[in-house]
Length: 403
Image (cartoon, rainbow, N blue to C red; front, side, top):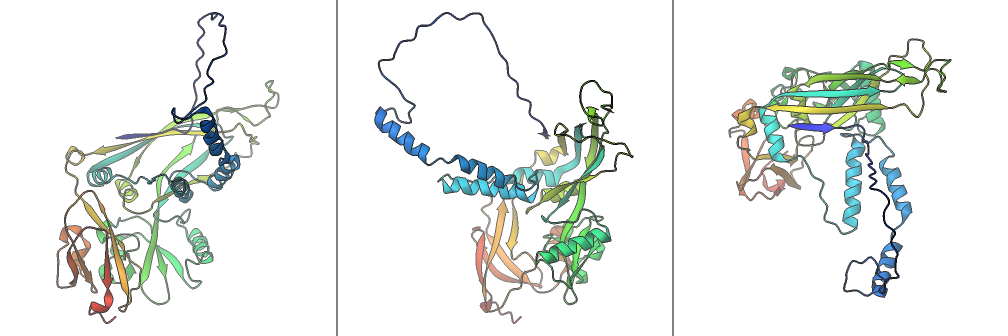
């Protein structure tokens, strides 16, 4: 399966001339016609309807909406891109249209996650900026994440979260990369804010952990580099004595290059997981080695990429199984025994199976791997045989739990 991304759209206009057209004498039509939505309406009624419609249109709205949607970076995978989609959907809904933001189809998600062999990205780059650069695309499950994993950047990231009220001033952050260090059996790190099952852990992936003076440390997010490549340096610049009139140091011939890279299957697995996923470009400018350059509005960067997913034939054409994901409570919540809570879940695919709900207050390593997900004495039934409606009201006062 190939998906094509293009950085520039070039309109094509074709003018065809077929000689001198014959002269045409126009005549005043006997019946004046107007544009119409309903041919049964007379001219006066139709004109009145169109005038009423025109009266509710405000050109200033277009200006305000464009300023709002472009007020922050909104590349694909950015938080503002998602906000823009929600903003547009809200507008259509306010006008009376039935609106839905399409999500990743379960069938496609399932086949990629269960039969992916290799992912290759090929990018064609034309660089008309007056310098080369290293471009990285970072990925995370959170809209806020550090630009790298050094202690300095991690400290800046911690301060940013604290300023937004997402961390306490006494909290600190550190990074774990080994799954053996975050096993739920250890009881040292809480993982379920980020993953639904310990089998989803990937060795080498930087997991950002919040440390508090009391309580269990908690993984709050992950951050990794999706792919990285270098922009080609311009082929040549305009000189001081150039006769074209362009200033010295401006790009005369852009740099050009084609780059192929393989994206790790674990990263694709993360990006196709349920929940939110974000990307952020990061540019590293190495400088121009003491050579003066000229930056202008005519500079541009064009990147055209396509990505290829290679799937196993058995997985690509095999059956797709439904999946159930608990969305609340899904980790980090405190539940009180005298309250009632809505247990929420979503289902990918189609299924008429009934839903059984259980809870556990103890650790059991056999439950952390889906292949070994069996009912043990550690699990207590909440309710069974439920219709798959996506929610269940759980009254903890009748659960028998004391804390």
